[in-house]
Image (cartoon, rainbow, N blue to C red; front, side):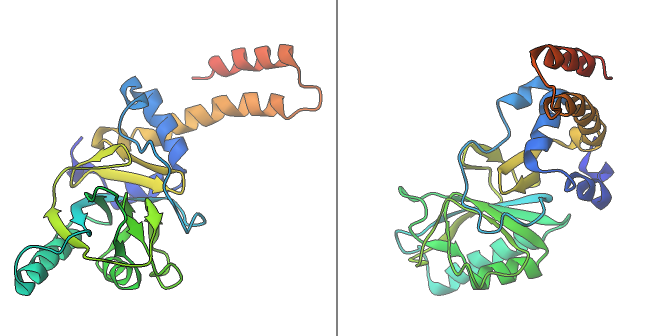
Length: 235
């Protein structure tokens, strides 16, 4: 399936489930997704109450320890090209930024101004191993998954735009479909988008049998075995 076959409604449907549930569905569709395509390190998420976000990745790399190279005009031009990348169709988008500093998070790219800009450009949120700040002033509804919180932006600047990145173990290419919430994030291949709802429904029905038994007052190992057998017969 190509990206052209995927609709906004398809992405909205996937936002009905949290990211662990999406990972469950991915694993059931193809065992290779048990070991790749998802974050493997905990993010700091100041807004765990927000619904999952699903969108197309816009990628970049940053540094903050040392000043940017080039004239102020060249630095501004690079930042403008980055914003053009964020605004590219299709949307909605999620920005995935890899901080290349030896100690990522030395300077925060994200705060009041950049969250407002990105939200205005149709971006749902950011996933980064870098830092965030201005937590009380960040744009409402804009999701943030970050490596840490920090007070300064230092010399933070964009060094690469629209390039493959790796953030907390998740490899992302520009245009990848990303699902993320306070648990973490994963990449959804285009061919899985329309298959996931049915697979998740199947897994939910199988789990319901075991959960119902486990929550009953007379639950024991024998009833667990029976529920496991019944669950396995659901197709």
